[in-house]
Image (cartoon, rainbow, N blue to C red):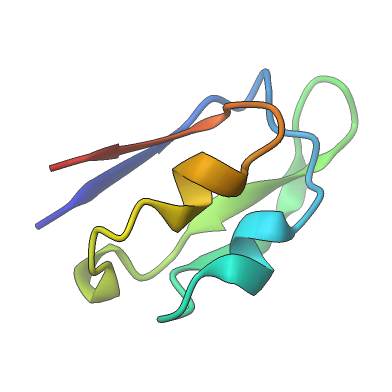
Length: 67
């Protein structure tokens, strides 16, 4: 199974990963990080196709996909 790591200190909850993911792995969480942002939450790790679009499009480099 693919591991998707989110650096919660960098994520500002922009939602780009939610929109760009072709298999809808992400959802913005109800909880907030220490800066007050609703962070990205990978809820469907098992659906990940390892396209790395989330990593490429994240403006804050908060996402890392482990192969």
